[in-house]
Length: 175
Image 1: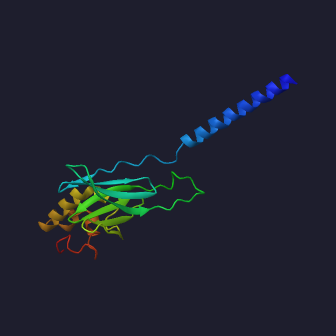
Image 2: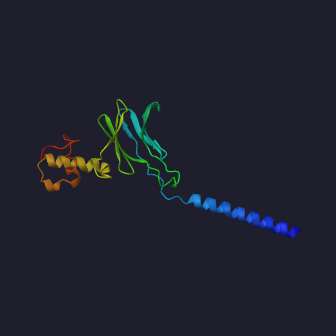
Image 3: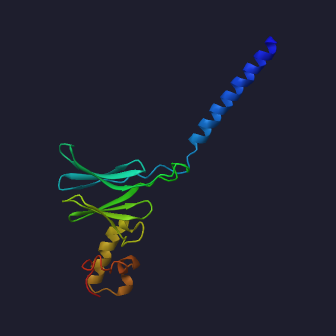
């Protein structure tokens, strides 16, 4: 009787340990990589940065000299389905671009938003540029300069032609 109890206890402990190991093994294998860090933008003594947890994403404005948070605005809320894995549902901000008094934000799903820096109003916008083309703003600027100097149209990258939309009519000189 005693040996049967000891055997039963050993089996129980072994099953428990196998269960614990299985839980930690499953939880350690995430389906997505960590989000790439978004470089902050510093202008006029204010640092604009992206923060969030994949469910709620924010833009934070911080005074560079005092490091005091001036304002924080929610860019978007990502609805999480409780029946799906959390990590594959997270969406992060992956790009920031400052243009005069507007901060443009792009998320990992190529959805674009604009933040009015004076009123902190957030508006969802149609992405005028192709995905990842915000990173090539220097090339875009060079293309606009080429076009304004009379270079042939073939020298202008295709992403510049996409900019001639009602949202940005004054960005390019007339053709």
